[in-house]
Length: 252
Image (cartoon, rainbow, N blue to C red; front, side):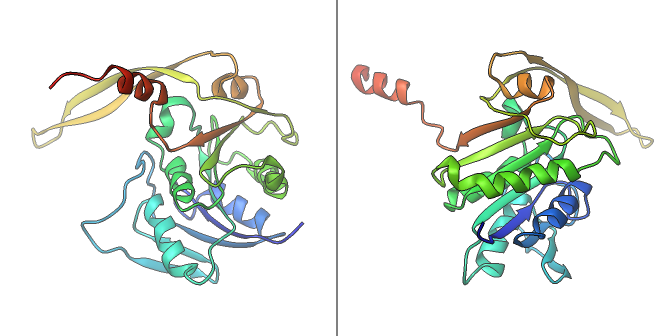
């Protein structure tokens, strides 16, 4: 196995259990560099900071923190830290909580992998479902390390990235996995309206998700205690509609 140069990032912050455990496990076999937010950036999606300058702080030799989003972290790493030689792979995670189905559109974790795919760098987004504080991450990190070792066998184009969701750690090695499609989340969004001590209104966006158990989906796999691996691409083009529209057209 050849040693890889790997960039890791996340949306939970450089201090989170998930990314720290992944960093420690990967560096046993690879050259690992961390560029991650200095605070939580969950649900930041694929946002890029353009209206203010970004600050970067060196935590240690191979670890940096920035006050930007996960996408900012990838951009800063590629154009500064890896300016002379790009990383062989980008891994975003291990996220504290699942990123499945429609939720990937909100996810800062997935967004970092999307940015990697745009840059034509093999990328993974990794999340642990139903994460609770102090839940062990070592077995999850070991699985990711094994996947990195076998990645070339998957024969994926750089434009395709993998969205990985792991079931909660049950104390046993994580070996069982399934290649899946995105699931469907039925979410009744709720806006909670309250008033602060100064009499001014404020709002919380919340709601309770309900997953549709679709055969072959990421949710189905994780719900059965199986690791879900979903191949994704950024291209949103509806090719069937495009073909039909080119045939039909409309009059001006």
